[in-house]
Length: 529
Image 1 (cartoon, rainbow, N blue to C red):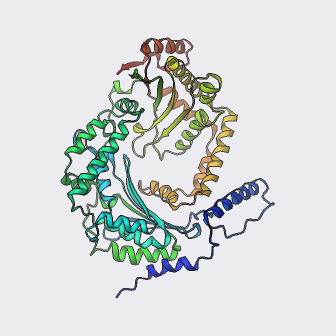
Image 2 (image 1 turned 90 degrees about the horizontal axis):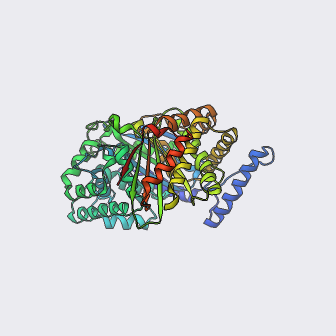
Image 3 (image 1 turned 180 degrees about the horizontal axis):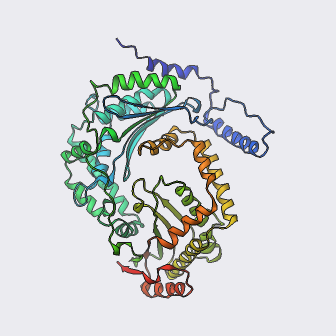
């Protein structure tokens, strides 16, 4: 009989831990103390010497990971040792496929529906049903979930380190030996997917999302409405979902990540003996397609689909108007330093009480309660990337608020950022990295590392990320701001109640045009819904 050394090792780790046992109250107190000591050590490097152990506080060392491959299939495995980081384990399987692989008109929500079913964790190698599996996992303190994004689908379990092997076995069996032998589960999850979609449609911001997607992603799955998706879900069969899985859950697209309390050496043994030698061996691993059936669909835009627009969705039952200003960003996620420039621009426009738009719209103008911005960089197609500003104001002042936003972003595009704002970015980004040091959940490292590996990029170490963030120059931020705010497509969407919206916009925008502070005067296209 094969000796299952890994189970005894994980159990043994619990009793041989040299860290001081902690309660949650003690943990919170220690976090504050150590955060203070680290800050003062930065300011006065010779004042303190930090000695350990600091339970649950020490960052995972960037060097404590390794990448392996299952020989027969080519499936990649990432192991991250969290030995210094407490006793939490995290197991995740990512697939480089998602909602962008769905087909317009038919089979929408296939990726999402399939994710719901696999997340039930039933498998051909486990006789238990989903309820029994759920009860066993929750009894052990394990939580699990799944997610679907445009380019990515993920399944994960997190829990105590002593249950690490249980989590690995359950997830590997469910993902690679997926079984659905209950029509009840299929029908129940169909209802769950529909309810999730209807919850999305009930949001006040949903009409704005529909209009914005119509102009940003024409004839692409991202522009599909909830109604279209609900109709598709109603018609999807189990055979459709199996076809989607066979086409896109290819070996080349799968990444398994194990964040465990095992040391680097024992982690290698575990991957070799337990994962490759047992759970994913040639005798147990089912046949998967080696390559996905086709590439992700790229966006195709006509000349009229690249002009600026302003769209109004009227709802006479609301007294407040929501405003969304979106720019198409000509960069992808892995473009050198561009994502840090986007972060800097977001901080300068809406990051705090001294940000440009907060001062203009609230402190000085008294127009809004809050304003936020959301940079999004697509992994594949730069034409999918966006920068969005969101706020809301009284119906009577909607034109005034739009004009203020357009004035500020135009000025930022023309003149760039000030030295004071650049200093603010450097200090804020340094604070963000310090905050990340106190976030000790291994899921953080899984997310950080997998986003590179899924796209076959080198892992960006924490030291490299910090270096890149501080390597950014003011001139580089200015160049990105100019490209986005002066030369990229602009889409303004308003959802609210004013009857005379057309006149309000004409008056306010014409005043902006006369001041020559906004570039969209010659290309503006208006849409009323």
